[in-house]
Length: 425
Ligand code: PHE
Image (cartoon, rainbow, N blue to C red; front, side, top):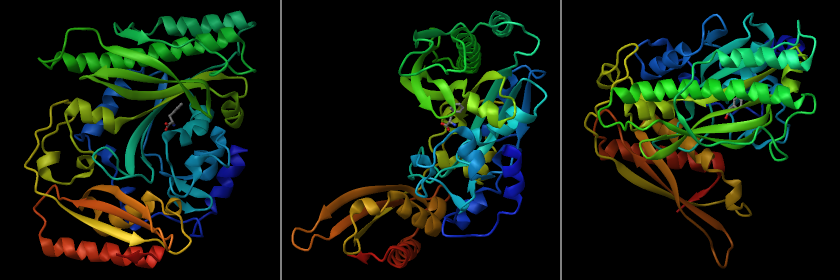
């Protein structure tokens, strides 16, 4: 199935009524931040990679972000009606191709082809999203997977022993688990095709692996920070749901007074192994967004800085070194409001925030620091709906002058009129 799909995907190009990728996003796909060895995201990737034995986990970098709808969704058991597939959330090149929204898009292929039982992927991913200090339409994720085959074993007990032997090899973490979850339960079930002991063995390997990774990353880095507490690192496990794992969890780590959501993970759905052509295997997968981790580790206050080409940003970092970013002067920002009536008969829900975000981004790019909906009302007599958004313009490189902001404002207003037939107020 996967192979047919791949063959078919070769012929699929061109645009159609699904196309919503914009030139700005297209440009981001060519940036390849992880090819700069001094970039903080590259350093973090390499630190995470280094915690996994090389002979056990194949590393994959620079996989093409343009993937089929099958790879990004169907192969992972994500049903056709799932919200994440909607045009308001995902960048479509056309009906059959998207910019991957997560590195999980490569799971089936990775479980299928690599000679090692494990794999690690680092890559850029794309989601239509709001604009603020911690959201950007492109970001980076890492994915890991690990499988075992019952080949060579004659019983469930032997398979479990094989998995447990691998778990025993994982260095212990020294962290404190303040909240754990049951191995599985009705709300977070094991799969029918798996004996309970196998599900538990895979779970243990997964949890111990990720605990070792966060323990090493956060504790090592904490050691260099004189203000860091001497207490052990605290983490907690929380039940979660993903269509491609069951049971599923999220791990959160307590860092500088806040619970930081890290890995999404779980026991890989047998359906995923079916797609990979290895239905007999069992295993796990995890995914992690690395910008938010890099922001805390390097003290980077704004996610847009990762995309900065300003030497005052890039020159602060060296390959393999975790140091605290020193903010260079911030230039003053200016906000402008955009108020408009929606077309008659259009409800505010039919105008999606992300529609405005893409217009703003297309016109003003990284000169936009924040966009927020500040007012929404229905006229009592005419029943027409009005929305008002506030856009904060700010450059990380210079002070913007009024004339250029006026031009941006005019262009945004023009685009709104053309694309959404709104009446500006
Ligand atoms: N792909 C999921 C996400 O983007 C994370 C995940 C990966 C969860 C692998 C489970 C297994 O949030």
